[in-house]
Image (cartoon, helix red, strand yellow):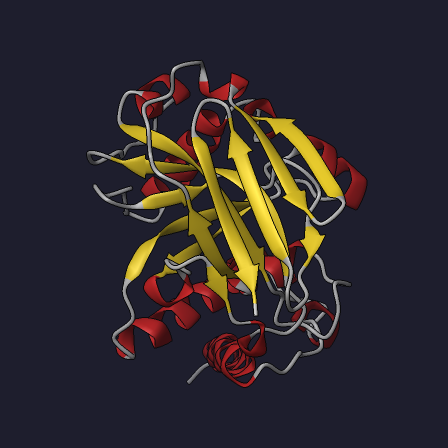
Length: 264
């Protein structure tokens, strides 16, 4: 074995070990030190590899892929945090709070974000997919996404967040409808206790349809596609709220209806 091959094996072991650590952290509700602080020479390719390896662990347990979630689709949020590009993670059946009740006992330090969700009615794929093609291929709903970084705090960077599946933890969906206005003009309001925050679809990469198109182009690079029945959460439209027992969070849209989540 050459020295370069030996070094490559060591890096591959690092990737798999990090995936195992994150998987255990999610199941044991234990925060980790961000991997970028433990391995400052971590590369973009390796951090995506960690996310893929972690998804492989889920597949081997028999968990079912439901779709994808996007992170940092808001340009304003990226600028504020010094982030150069969005990312994405995967959604799994166990993350869907289909009864609208969220058990906080399985989470570390969760926050909820109001979002627009896309449901693919047919396969969306290719290197040149645009927002118009996306808008013609599915329907929209409001959603609440719960992010729960598997790190000890929210002091992490793009590499950490990407390795951690963009902090995907749970989600609630409203009913899906055809958009009666351009997706960028969709409106929503999140209400939680005394907090009320309103935003528009344009906060997600200019349009949630463009956010989905970006994802499809990324999937194409990985020889994958958005399949019929898959859901995409297109990124937080407003600032998130911290979740505590007894709290109910509701998001509503004049075009798409509403959904709610109760924390226990």
